Length: 222
Length: 259
Image (cartoon, rainbow over all chains, first blue to last red; front, side, top):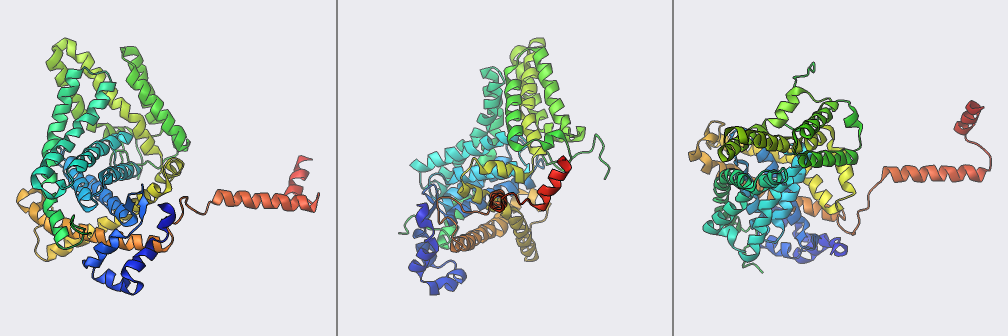
C-alpha cells in the first residue's frame, strides 16, 4: 500500500505515458484521465488515492467555508445542514467509496476546530460525523443513491435527522428525562431534516452533469 | 484598539491573543483540564455543587483573560436551546416543578461546552497541530493541513468566480441570494465551476505531491529541529570530551562564575 505509493507518479506515466502529461493537463475531460485514475495507488486507509483524498479534503473546505459564510445569518435551526448534506453527498458521489463521507466529516470537524468555527467546541465533530456515517452506511446498500433524486432526498433527510441525536446525547448525559430529550431532539432534528433534504435535492443533477462531462468516473467505466 | 471587559472578538470561539496562565499551559494539559471540568459539570445534580461547578467554570474562563463580550459571543447560541428546554420542562411538569430541572439541565449543557470553548480560545492552531501530530497518522495530518491551506485559496476562487459570473449577467448580488428563485443561478454559476476547479486543483496537487515522493514510505521523513539540536549538542559534548579537559569558552566562564 504505502510502499507502493511512491511509484504513483510513475504509474501515471506508464498508463498515460510521460509525453501525455501536458495533454492531460489541458484536456482535462479526456477519457484518459478517468483511465489514469483507475491506476493510481492507494494513499489513505488502503482505499483512497491521493487525488481522491485531496478532493475529499476540498469538500471539507467547502463545508467550512459555507458554514463560516452563513454564521447566524439566517437564525433558523438546522440551516447548517443544507450545505453539510450537499457537500457530504457530493463527496460520496464524486468518490463512490465507503468512508468518503466520513473522511470529509472528520476533516471538516478538524478544520472547524482549528479555525475556531465550532460554537459547540470539540463536540462539533459529532454534528459532522453522525450524518456522514449514515450516508456511508446507506451507500453500502444503495451505491446509486447520489444519482437518484428520490433516494438522495430520503437518505439526506435521514442523515440530517441525526442533528437531533448529537444534542440529545449531551442532554441525556446532563440528566434530562428521556421524554424531554426526545422532544428536544425532534424539534432540533425537524429543521435539520428540511434543510438536509433541500441540500440533497441538487446533488443528483450535479453528479450527472459531472459524469456526462467525464469529470468523474461513471459506474460503467472500467 | 483599547481592550475593555466588554470588548468582544469577531466571532465565537475565536483565538484570543493575550497573555494569561491558561494561554501558557501546554495544549495537552488544557485538553485534559477541559475534559475533567466537562465531566464534573455533567456529574453534579444538587444546587450547591452545581453553583460551585459554575463558579469554577467561569473562573477558568476569566483566568484566560477573556471578556464579558467574548462570553456573550460564546454562549448566545445556547440561549435558544435554553428557552426550548425550559419551555419543554414547564410543559411537562408544570410551572413551579419544571423550573429547577429545566434551568439545571440547560445550565449544565451550556457549562459543558465552556471548557472546550476556552481550549479553542486559548490554543493556537500550531500548538493544536503539534499535539495532534502525536495522535493522528501523518497522512491524515497532511490532508488536514492541505485542506486548511486551501481555505483562503478557495475563498478567493469563489469571489473571483462570482465576480466573473456577475459580469456575465448572473443574478448573484447579496440581495438575490435571499430569493429562492435565483438559487438556480447560484448552483450553475458558482457551485459547479467551483467543483470543476476543485477537481482540477486536486489533480494538480496530487501529481505535484506524488512527484515529490509524498507517501513513498509508511512513515514520514521530516526535518525535526529538536532532534537536530540534540544531535548537535551530543556531537559538541563528544567533541569536548575528546579534547579531554579542554573546556569551551562558555564552560570556562560558567566555572569562573561558580567560583
